[in-house]
Image 1: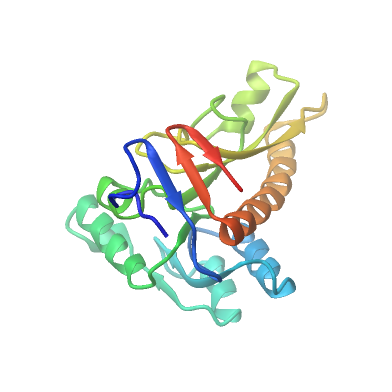
Image 2: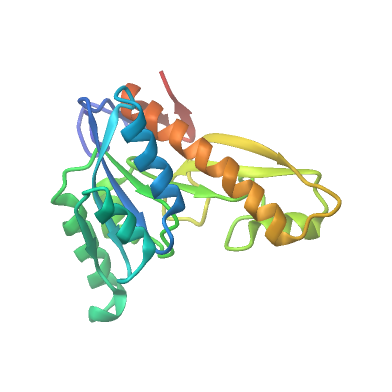
Length: 221
């Protein structure tokens, strides 16, 4: 596996080829439905290619952590309010995730922005989802923004996390048609269904085959 800080990759080129099974850390903040989809995929398919070695959260007492514990996966929680600064929290999260030596970090409904120290350690290995077809409608209200704009097709995006908001290199996208009867909640539910399927597919492909990021272009073998 070649890390972005390694000398084997020229500037703008990141390559990762995990040794099987790829080690995956998942970060959650709520109910953990995307996490559950990944747990189910790993348990159902011996050839999935990756194993979830830990689940972390930014809060305690959430369903996402319960799902992990029920599956026998180690968990941890680091709350921002327990640290003197957001930067201290970011470094603590970096150090905790690093204990599990992940090949891939999956932000699965994790409602905190990852800071520069975390991304410096795991850049090119952190993925997230967005409920719109990036670069359209970034931010917290993608489905509602899509409806307000009047688009006929929206969807979901899986991307590598960078310092910006929902603007990292795109790995894969799935389209969802907008219906006349949609409100933001109805549309978002259909997007979330597509998102779970896309995330499982992407994580499995990354785990099995590795990936290359050439500037903004993501190449999957």
